[in-house]
Amino acid sequence: MFDGLRKKLSEAVKVFTKKEEKAIEQRQEEAIAPVPPKEEQGIEPKNVPGPQQQSIEPKKDLKEDPIIKVSLKTKLKGIISSSVYLGEDEIDNFLENIKVPLLESDVSYEATEAFLESLRTKLGQTKIDPKNINRELVDLVRKSLFDVLSKSGNGVNITDFVKARLGSGDAPVKILFLGPNGTGKTTTIAKLAHKLKREGISSVLSASDTFRAAAIEQTERHASKVGVPVIKSKYGADPASIAFDAVAYAKAHNIQAVLIDSAGRQETNKNLISEMQKMVRVAKPDLIIFVGESIAGNQLSEQVKEFGKFLKIDGIILTKLDADVKGGNAISIAYATGIPLLYFGTGESYEALVRYTPEFVVDAIMPNN
Ligand SMILES: Nc1nc2c(ncn2[C@@H]2O[C@H](COP(=O)(O)OP(=O)(O)OP(=O)(O)O)[C@@H](O)[C@H]2O)c(=O)[nH]1
Ligand SMILES: [Mg+2]
Image 1: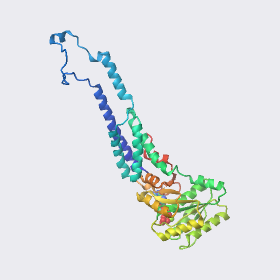
Image 2 (image 1 turned 60 degrees about the vertical axis):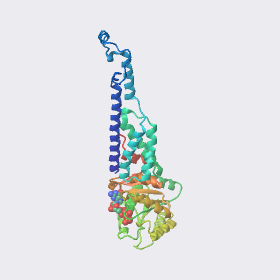
Image 3 (image 1 turned 120 degrees about the horizontal axis):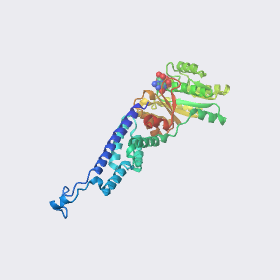
Image 4 (image 1 turned 90 degrees about the vertical axis):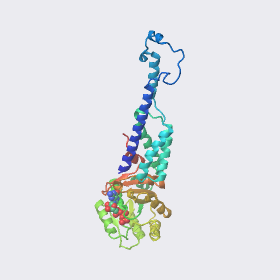
């Protein structure tokens, strides 16, 4: 999870830290180096004493000269311990080093630019402690990542959402899941049913994918493993009417949440999109959740935007993060769509569902060392 991005970013920070440490060391050496005598500087000294005079004058040890000692000491102390602003060239250099890993790791161009802009501002305003360059850079990178990730909110805990709705008398709470083929919609529904159950919230699954072969049996299998009821019909049946039946079942049996599955579809398929709109009209979901897979790369944001033209998407669940070696998509999607990211699917087990928060992503990408 986020492995590619984490390794590349921390490497870029390390490389730049080494460069800066060297630059500072060099400045220190320049400060320690004795000032060359004026002859060497090509300046004709005035009142040069003759050779005889020279031998009479006792040799002055530079180290013993209290004036030189103090000034050198102060100068060095200043250079070694006081914090410094990075120069513009240094900032440019650092940002360039960090831009490539982001783009290579599926972070979109727009999100990368937003991140770099935030980081540039922070670098320009922050005095860096030369003894702690790595730590300070890590801190600024973390803050800039946080800025970009916060654009899609701070995440929503579905169980809290359901509890709040139930508290205001809105039972059952209906959640519809949609997205492209094979992204993990049905598995994610099972994970959420499991999660709700553990928190004491009852749910029923609506097997509204009547299109894909074996989809109904798959939903039934999940329902029986998790221990929740499922409402189903025949293949080819109207998905909206199954959702309607599931809501009626929930009302009749005091079930608190209805999780409505749907067949995977491409955002360009007009018939399937209008079928989806019918589901929304009939079932009136409280939440419409887009389930996309992290490994879809940069096209994921486009998919969300296209679906969003026909239906109001309330949240996104990003699956298969465990299989994504790059990991930048979470940043891209948070930035590009502005739609709240809710959860990450991190494996095939029912437990493999992690709540999204900007902090979680920042910690995974740039751990505080
Ligand atoms: N590694 C990994 N696999 C996942 C994750 N979520 C789902 N899967 C797997 O992805 C495959 C497809 O999952 P489904 O839940 O059937 O996906 P779907 O979106 O319902 O598929 P369709 O209904 O055909 O559109 C299954 O093999 C799941 O086990 C995840 O977070 N990580
Ligand atoms: Mg499915």
